[in-house]
Amino acid sequence: MPNIKIFSGSSHQDLSQKITDRLGLELGKVVTKKFSNQETCVEIGESVRGEDVYIVQSGCGEINDNLMELLIMINACKIASASRVTAVIPCFPYARQDKKDKVGADSNVSRAPISAKLVANMLSVAGADHIITMDLHASQIQGFFDIPVDNLYAEPAVLKWIRENIADWKTCCIVSPDAGGAKRVTSIADRLNVDFALIHKERKKANEVDRMVLVGDVKDRVAILVDDMADTCGTICHAADKLLSAGATKVYAILTHGIFSGPAISRINHACFEAVVVTNTIPQEDKMKHCPKIQVIDISMILAEAIRRTHNEGLSRFLAAPAVAAWCFAAELLASIEPK
Image: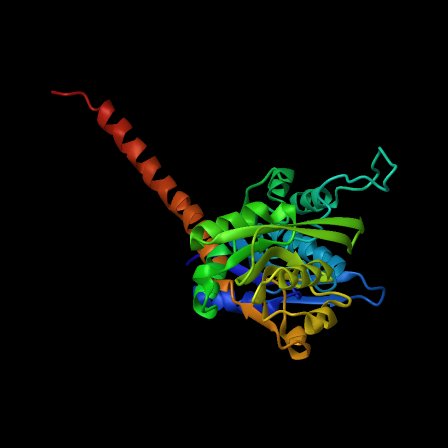
């Protein structure tokens, strides 16, 4: 794969290394440090002139610092004459702030920001030409960009894990913990040819669920909760209790992005889950030490294949241009020759 450079931000270097290993490449040299006033400084340690550059940085950990680091890395590569800069963001930051919600029960006007749109503008202004991400909280976020956005899905890896690790998967029930995930669970249920259910939840305020209503039958079945992300885990733990009280024999949770902030680990340890399965869009090593129920699916092959196809498509156009020009020149030359 010529003319390609892959750099890693500081948020998830293990995933970046796995991606480059699968592509048979080496990570580019980059040094990230902070000044004494906590300003971020980035030094790209090799030439990127004319290169197809991919920067891997996930929206996790110190999110604001990592986002700023990504913007600086994009801009540094762009002004160093990179031909194209692609931001590979496995977990898109601020994705939950994608619309203007009402503030308070009696309010008819919202003054909430649409921060996901702000992040999209920042990435574009920094110089990103292309975005690769995974399981956006809302697919409409792609419309916030004026540049191409590839929203990849963890669904194939999830299906593979279910078939290989759950003995009774053919009679299981796929459950969405909220109405917003209905499309996600119906897709998985159709692929497995099993039933699905839905939990309707009402919130008093952010990160606090008031009550839940189960729509569907999980009695004497294995219930598999599927969602795109879990933060404090209040919703999925309440949902697990609801499923168990409705007659489910076992409860699993499968999440694309395991944020697990605040009391999340404690809640999972005390919940009735057989396992909580997440992908490695966010580092989970430290959390797995404190919670044996957490299992990780590696999605580096999906991101690596997306990078390979994106690069090869761009390279084929680059290589095709001289061939087309030569063909046009030959056609003009033949047309200029007068027949005897």
